[in-house]
Image (cartoon, rainbow, N blue to C red; front, side, top):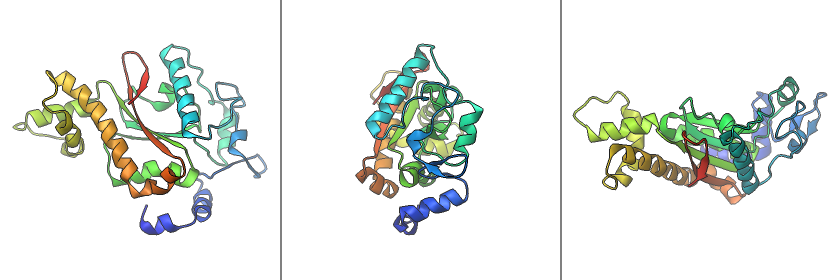
Length: 248
């Protein structure tokens, strides 16, 4: 978002977004009348069918942890996958959390947190690598839709981080993913020399990169207003072995 767009009124921005079908602060009923976002429920049942939309970052985090506990225990409910909700959401969206994570096929946020259609916005890059375009993509939810929580999610055995650790430790070899390596270099430099093996280095880098990304997002100008209004940006780590998410 440019300085000009950040000065635009929230009402004008959301009106424009709604006009092109990307969403608004409210959902719409079948006759087009706006309804509060907490009135949108899963008509086909599921974990969120009787719960209102989390209104704060702490409520959103608790909801994510409840879903992750189900996922890790093999008790996923897969809420909000029916036709009725899909059609209801066509009129607008009110996601209550944004997850910025890795493109890894084993770390789908909707599965990891057992959430339904319309609950989460997701932004995914290799190794959760960060740049200005990613910052604007992540900021869309808090800025335009007042989403209260952003979660930066790293994960065990991240391939992009593993590649970077190897590339930076073997600089005589060609690097076919030099942009990813460059983006993850600060995390490498943070933990270099603190571990005894490359596997330990990778795991330390994953956690360091999550915290580095949280810091970078918090300093991005797009988040200044949302942070002042209660947005929280938190880091988390997902274990492929256990299915559990821990807050960093």
